Image (tube, rainbow, N blue to C red):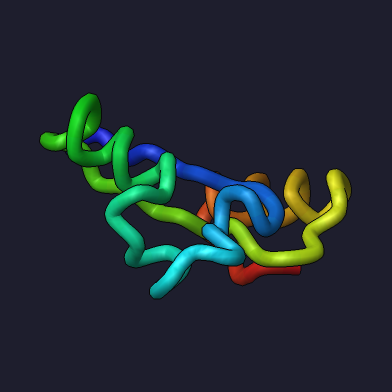
Length: 68
């Protein structure tokens, strides 16, 4: 099974939506349902992440280390 990683800021997290990361209208969940339905999806988006934080978290996730 392929793994898909979503990383970003409040847009990826779903800030402003009910249930945020669990909301069915969050674009990550739409992709999961419509395109990646046979893939494992990991959404590590967090409100307030800077470009540097997004890069560091994505890199850490990719190499399997704890977030730096």
